[in-house]
Image (cartoon, rainbow over all chains, first blue to last red):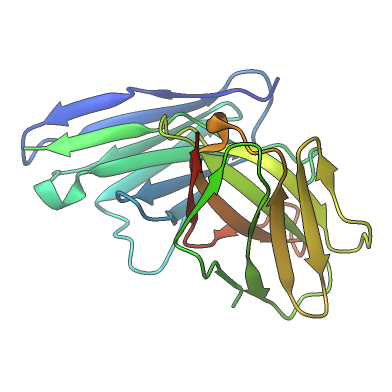
Length: 116
Length: 116
């Protein structure tokens, strides 16, 4: 149980285009989902906290208009990178929380974004 | 604000030997959760072990155990009988209990290599 999927696993796009990444909790309801960014050999950097039915809470320094987050249902959150540039290239990971499990977060497999 | 520190960027251990990874944290809260996550080359985040701060007993999961020193704000991970599959990045993490779902704060990570 507690499986989180992420799609796509890898995406390459041209500079200036927008890319949408989906995060789904497959076998539990996640009222809260988190989006992280990870650079090579570095830790996870929290970008935003996504709550179902409400606006996402962004961490300091994260551009809200560039990284659009939508949490339309208890099993789906999306991250859209708008007008992507090469510096947005990174590994993006989502996680979903199950309140019944000690605040444990269940992580998706990640999405590698490459902007040309 | 909470912070998590891991002072060992890289470590190595011989197969079948024991290794201890260090972690310290800073918080003003009395109740919280601590975690160790493993990130193998696949980059899938995997929960290794979890500790509730209000529990004095150190958590154990098979070959993995922790030494939780609340007063010293220390949370080390001991891996016994190291296996090649233990090669990965290990992240120490902190989560509060103030809200029903606090965000998780990750340390910078320790890269562990198990040598055959």
